[in-house]
Image (tube, rainbow, N blue to C red; front, side):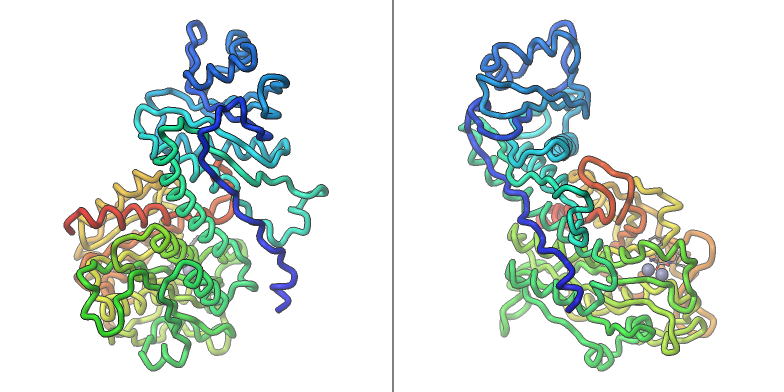
Amino acid sequence: MAAARSRKQSPAPLDVSVSARRAADCPADWLVLPLCELDPARWRLPARAQAVDRALSGRIGEVLSVGDFRGRRGQTLVLYPGEGCKAERILLLGLGEDSELDAEGLREAAGRAIRAAESRGGKSLAILAPSSRRLKTSGVAQALAEGLVLGAYRFDRYQSNGGDDEPRRRVESAQLLFESGDTRAARTAAATGIALSESQNLARDLSNEPPNHLPPVEVAKRATDVAKEVGLKIRIMEPAELKRRKFGAMMAVAQGSANPPRLIVLEHNAPKKGAAGSRGRKTICLVGKGVCFDSGGLSLKPSTSMVKMKHDMSGGATVIGAMRAAALLRVPHHVVGIVGAVENMPSGTAYRPDDVITSACGKTIEVQNTDAEGRLVLADCLHLARTEFDPIATIDLATLTGACGVALGSWSAAVLGNHERLVELLIRSGEKVGERFWQLPLWDVHREHMRSKIADVKQTGGREGGTITAAAFLWHFAGDGPWAHLDIASVADSETGTPLHRGGATGFGVRTLIELLHEIGEAKL
Ligand code: BES
Ligand code: ZN
Ligand code: ZN
């Protein structure tokens, strides 16, 4: 395939390890010393940084005395140590107020470290793990590993030379330096952080991939590769099966495109054949909108709104990323990931506004706007989740409405659902991992509002409360079991860079879902 030939081989992921080496003895290109805000008059370095300072005959202390570095959040200063330290350069990195340092602060610091190293060149880096009042050793190690792996991510497989005249500089390895008594705990936690953030980067990769390179068939192939890599069960439904199963809502969206749809079902801890139920395990379904490109269909989007619609499969990408992480981290539940992969295109075979279509559960839908395609795909996927897996909870993720960004901006995703406990659990899980969710109401009045005069349900709810009416539509198909809907349209991609993200797909949701899967074990829904 031409696509495969023109695309570069992805570079090996950043190699992150834990070591108990003395910082000054580390032969890295960069030694990073993260420091909390220091009192300019009476500063005192943490013990392990003092050791580096001694090896450098007090040069760090001199810089601090002059006042050039205060440890403010995000502040950096480069020193060239020469004798006394095996690293070529030292990066002083500000962490801000000691009392406020949390996992997100450490993730960002690690992201900044890797960017600073990249911009000046250098292949290896060692970070002296700071202590935190709020986090244990494991929390520090996990956050640093996540920050390094997320910060190192870039999507440049279609750029001959990374887009620059000179070959792109890449940090290849990073060591986290802990005290010898802490290395065991740090190693386990760093491995968790690596599994999570590499899975988040996988979600970013899938969402960033151009639509001509990633039609639904290709999403299914990538999901198959992931399933093989980490040992997930996978089932892929092709159009013939989707028609046989009467997945009329999803097929209506797909019928306008030359690229056929695929419905992907991934399972972690799938019950063995013949065994009754899930052997006491709880089943949780994750459902993702996988619209590989959303042109709007016959209700065509204006040109400027159509750009970036390759990211309309971010919900599906997040589900695939989360399934990978669930397998690697051996989440103790039966987790099912369902992705409806389709393309929404205008053509002579496309579905129309005014069509009445019949969804998999038998409910009829009055189509009003072919650009509201995501909810149709999800309607059938939610039906599959409910009828085939009987889950204790279902969570769907989708770049569902432009209204979500209008309501919340890109600072948070929206969460709505029919089960208050599940919604709360999602919000709390998000807070723990640095992803924000804001609840919007979902009441019976909203659900009633979606009844149609000529079919069972109408597809859209008018100008008001677009994110709510989209969720109210889904509710008709999700049933009465615990269900929550995450509208990630506002956060799935962004051009505003952060230390953990250079632009493009964010991979938002992977870490929250895994945190939720851990929490759900203890919590009673
Ligand atoms: N994929 C879009 C939603 C979207 C918009 C995501 C902007 C990211 C950025 C979705 O399929 C859509 O077009 N929704 C319509 C619904 C409307 C026709 C009821 C929308 O939001 O305008
Ligand atoms: Zn659309
Ligand atoms: Zn869409």
